Image (cartoon, rainbow, N blue to C red):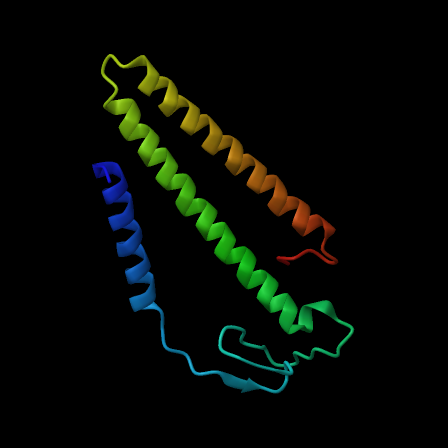
Length: 133
């Protein structure tokens, strides 16, 4: 195992441990208005799974939660890729291959962010009434 693999493994373990240790201990509440017993979905007053209004549904709350976590993950990954590429670019010196690799990473990260933004807009467009209004 080389030094790069060890550092990535160590960073991943540190991040995972931090997330696990910082996660609050939540007891499942009896959300009878949602028709579910859950610790991650807080049902606002008037929420009912049998209602014809989509936004008063526990599945709706879960969808918004998943999209928010996905958006945060994409943002963290993009920042990490830009930082990694900038370190490669800065330390390249006379290595043309390293410069090209850094430029490729930056270009691909920007393209990925643009595609994620389009996906976000498409989901907001195709969802009845908009997802985030």
